[in-house]
Image (cartoon, rainbow, N blue to C red):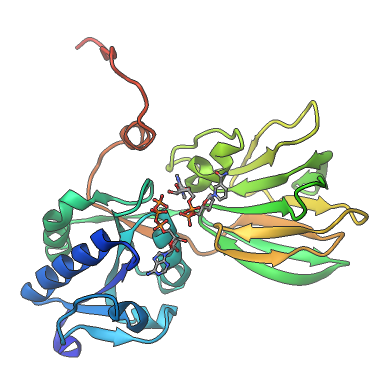
Length: 301
Ligand SMILES: NC(=O)c1ccc[n+]([C@@H]2O[C@H](COP(=O)([O-])OP(=O)(O)OC[C@H]3O[C@@H](n4cnc5c(N)ncnc54)[C@H](O)[C@@H]3O)[C@@H](O)[C@H]2O)c1
Ligand SMILES: Nc1ncnc2c1ncn2[C@@H]1O[C@H](COP(=O)(O)OP(=O)(O)OP(=O)(O)O)[C@@H](O)[C@H]1O
């Protein structure tokens, strides 16, 4: 039984994808054969062909990772963001294997499964901390909502035909105001996600910073802003317009009351990602976005 094994790994899979289901079977077999225990969510186990010794847990909470040394994620970025929801508070690192379309946050591709199992068994991986943001929504001086994000907090309009009227603030000082479709408040990790689509810069993961990127602003000055990681960014939604919504990592949403103030600061708890390679972020960017680099000669030696 898993409980008798000295080491346990949690497996999270996008069970809607046949490739993820097949990969889960291979990974589980490989880990069990090497003497490691495997834990899986009960709801996912129904869709996975798993041996009996796999331990099942009901709910995806930080406690369900108690005693686990790693969370292996078989899916795309969405599945990794789902894993981060319970892995962050536990401090357990996540190792993503890309079985989605982009898998920007994943460390390995589907052809690397044997290597992944081997590296997990021999503990041949490093752990990198990714900055998060903590998000607080105020209304009339009261805190009405709190959340966090690995990619971004996005303040967005609700009605397609109306703009959101906002004033932006950094470190307690107003910067500018305009009508727009929304504002993305992003971490460096999120700089290649929604902030990127909104025209923000790509920020290398070792850089600590916060990003404030307007979406379709009706204004002459609506540049993406990059601040210190210790800055406090705020978006004030003007009281007289239709209220907006807040999205965190595209997964958790809450309606913003008119006059809401959304504050974002560096998160108290980072997300821990396991790394197998020392491949540069530049190479990952080129590979994932299929950037044209043919003709590159490099510096002479
Ligand atoms: N217009 C847009 O670009 C837009 C709109 C809404 C949400 N999003 C992003 O989607 C994320 C949620 O991802 P999902 O997979 O659950 O939703 P999803 O399935 O709708 O995919 C959104 C896309 O963003 C990619 N993505 C997510 N995080 C990334 C990152 N850190 N770097 C590079 N690409 C990344 C995903 O691989 C996917 O291709 C949100 O955090 C937000 O950043 C983007
Ligand atoms: N087991 C599951 N059951 C239901 N939904 C899932 C499951 N695993 C993942 N999802 C959801 O399916 C959506 C898409 O997943 P994911 O992002 O991993 O794949 P993808 O979109 O192909 O990859 P990428 O995001 O890299 O483009 C996400 O919202 C994710 O949370």
